Length: 280
Length: 256
Image 1 (cartoon, rainbow over the protein chains, first blue to last red):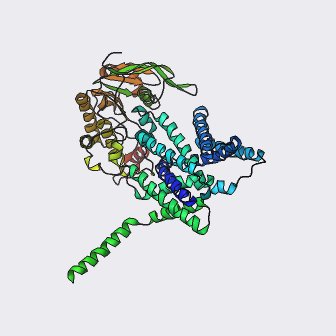
Image 2 (image 1 turned 90 degrees about the horizontal axis):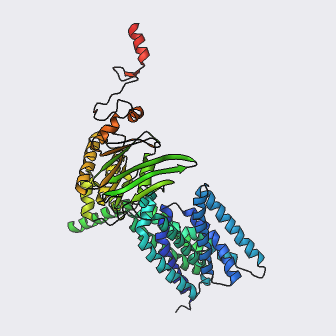
Image 3 (image 1 turned 30 degrees about the horizontal axis):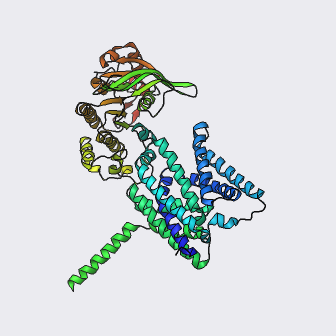
């Protein structure tokens, strides 16, 4: 069954959307969108390392971006530079190192475009298993640390004072982000991963009235975006990443419509219809 | 460390960029005790509270906490980001499992039970403080640290909330650490007052502290506790139409 490349892409894409949903909410709440960019820049170095050592792409991307994020946490403690400067420093230096390393390997010719924008043909059966079990691991871990992570998002001091151990939780969350980025790179591409994290969560923000509700709506929105995006990618032969992100954007715009007003107008209309029915 | 002691500070201090924010602080908080930290702005009250809570690690000295102490903390500043859809109900259960009954009765005790399902970000300053106090209570803490808990609350509400904190100490027999500027109200019910100004200026019972030279030097005689009258001088006068009249101008116009 998994022989069909498109089916593989769909399964992998849905798994990615389901884990990106709740994590994306935290990325928005904690204002980490630039951090997502840094990790995806690091993934290019991960690809170079994978080619050099002839290992699995996903695994080496996870190791490299995980290392970069831990290094960032270390730098934040050690230096007095603001976060955005540190992120910019890391993002671009890691990207540059990645490109340089790739440049040295003259025998390698990689398809940079599919790396940057995703390629549904690239998903292998091994990738599916990696994404599936990685996804389950991420969701279970997130459920386990939800309360302390959320408390830390609202107020780090309060979380620390009330015994939530926010420092440990922050490191776990950071590594989970690295994992999500490493498993979604083949589908969405380096350049657009942050979009998959943020846009469904932003759409969910417009609809949700509670944090857990927002996480679930974000998962649903992401899934719809992935499925529709992949189908349009197949139909019109466009890159998978941009197709998914454009679909997510359309969904986001839909959530901006004055839903309550539409609902009340529809409600009035159906009421009038039923009243008319009674009269007749 | 005695059984009754919830937290103990011994010669504790915090240093930032080679400047001591606060240094040589020693006191303890026992069960059923209200300890009030007073001092001018920048005297290290909040820093001391955060050190006591474990949010800041002391750069010198020791902070000892009784193991398995349930702590509630009401920080001085807490802003909810716009991107976070969060209602009072979620906020109340943020750092631990709390039953709906406990949430409701805590909201009732601070007079905001109608806000149970309200969006946290649309509350007024006073309402938000009441919700914060309710959250701290609902956890049934052993130790409760309140950093200016009644900021933005109207005068009547303020008296009620201090009364509530007093009652809480008796009902839960918890230790209370209070940071407040309302000296004449909070000092009366404190067991121990620590007067800070980068170090412990003086400490002891409210009576002892209020009569000490250091206290009077810091706060002046006007605000000595027990004095319910609030004395102040106007530096301007209003005309009958409400407009401002400069005092000098007025005297000259009277003279003319």
